Image 1 (cartoon, rainbow, N blue to C red):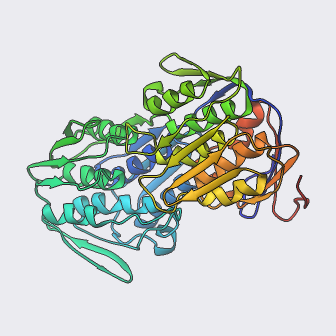
Image 2 (image 1 turned 90 degrees about the vertical axis):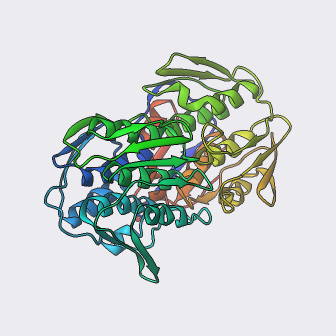
Image 3 (image 1 turned 120 degrees about the vertical axis):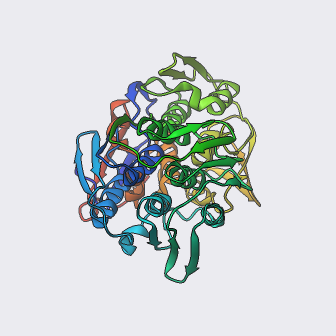
Length: 431
């Protein structure tokens, strides 16, 4: 297949059940904060099992722009942040993804100041940063905001008791990294519990940080004066694993998903079983099959260990293939049903009521011209296209490149018929 590029289109011929085996890549949401954490170390941080995605490349470029030495090889990234002198990341790069916000805590803790552009990323609704900033203020930082971004300064951060009003993932990660190099003890209450938060804590502990409670809602950090070089393997991407599981179920296939942590997917596997799928778990492998008709099952997103919002669009696509009506509610983001309009173009019967989608399953899907609007909506459209009659053309697939490593190749390995076309050569037409 051609190399990824802006303007590329994906041609998907539907109707083939996905069968075989597929390997899960490292987690984007774990790798990005760990890359930022390299700013805290007095030696190189080598991360392995790093996914080959655009957001990782953007973070590499941001760190290089600050002065870090960054080497990227097959499946690994090594970052030596000792030469870093700049504390103002490139504004254009920083606006590409929300994860640029993860530089806030590490730069402040290690260099004493930071100026960040307001972060970009997927337009899925308001994702405010007050909790990050209030937490840093409690630790002794002077923080201001203006039309250009966020500016913070602190001669030395100190421990504090930080009570989050919502378990924000990025906020928890930012405060966790800052607290690792602060004076004294920091307690983060109502902390996020996602697997990538746990993996960041494991990476920091390997670097010499003193952290307890990660994976629960109360994290305690005893700050240290230095963190050292280390090698760390990035946790498997449970969002990618869940995407494959739902693609297999939607297509009526039978596949083995390997190199993941099944425990990260508790709610997803629970819903798949309720929906009449057969699920076998082996700790680091998962087998999904759908021998009969899918059954409609309601779902509400919730912070971990609830059903991940990053898998809600894919679940909507799955429920279009189910028998009966399901109600899928989005409790975290107010703008995360942008995939629904595109799914309707395929023939799906979906109505939106506030933050809920009513899906009448079983309507026949037929190929159409579609466009990705964000990473996870794009994945949902791929799933639906695999189940539609005829050919679906998907544009703006660079969104998929930000979050999925070799998605088209992996699906083709499961028997899907799809092809990526450079934007200036793709044929027109669908159906």
